[in-house]
Each structure stands twice: as C-alpha cells, then as structure tokens.
Amino acid sequence: MSTMLNAARERRRSSEDSAARENAAARAAEQGPSANEIAQANIDFQARKASGPSNGMFEIVSKGPRISQYLFYGWTRDARNKSRRTITVDAGLNGDMDKAIVDSMIAIIRQNVTGDFTFDSQRLGRVVTLSARVQDNAGLQAFLLREFFG
Image (spheres, one colour):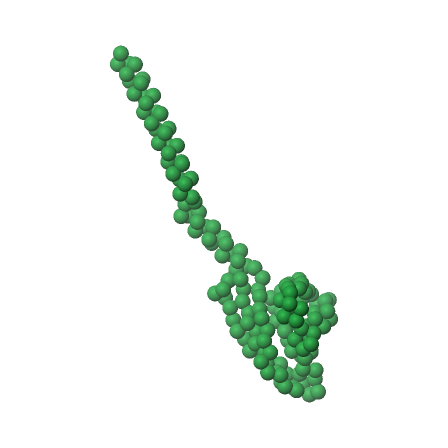
C-alpha cells in the first residue's frame, strides 16, 4: 500500500513540476524579450543607424563677384553627430563664382559619398538619385548649378 501511495505522490509531484515549468515558460513568453535581449537590440540598431550614409544641407549665405560663403549642415544618421561649417569660396579674378561654389559643394559630398546618393531637390520638389563618382562629375555639376542658380 505504501508503495502505491509513494508512486502516486511521485506522479503528482512530477505533474506539478511539469505544470510549473509550462507556467514559467508561458510567463516568460508573455513578458517578451529579456532585458539583455532588449539592450542588445538597441545597440545593434544604433550601430546600423550610425553607420548609414551621411546627409547634409547647403545654404548659400552670401555671394559676391569673387568671394562667397555658404553653410554646410552635416550629420550622420546618429543625431548626436552633427556639424555646421561655414565655407568661404574664392573664385579668383574673373572666375565663375557659381561654378566655384558648386565645385566646393561637390568636394564636400565626395568626402562622405563615393557612389550614388539621394538629393532632395527644392527646385524639382522631389528626391533624385545622383552620382558622386568622378566620371559623372559633369552631370552632377550641371544639376547642382541648375538647382542653386537656376
């Protein structure tokens, strides 16, 4: 009789243990990812975001016959890494100021981009894909001249 009682107790204990394990698994599934999993996902997301391409905006603040200035607001996809630079352009005596400004802008673009990039054209009212490759310089230069100087 005691053997039967002990066997029944053992079966009941094992079923309670398996039920407890199932309940713990269900609670863990309801709670979502662990704190470590969330932290690692955030780290991975920030790394992907920061390693993305740089962006920037140009604003011409003064334009003279020989000397001009424009601002470059540059940033990466990480909002903490942004900068504002004032660039002075000297076209030289009887130089083409529009072309000098655009060539300076292209040099800044090429510091950050080597291939295709997107450009938000205010003139066209849409985003266009341009090439920063050296062999495509004439097309990029012509586009930026139209964009900034009509």
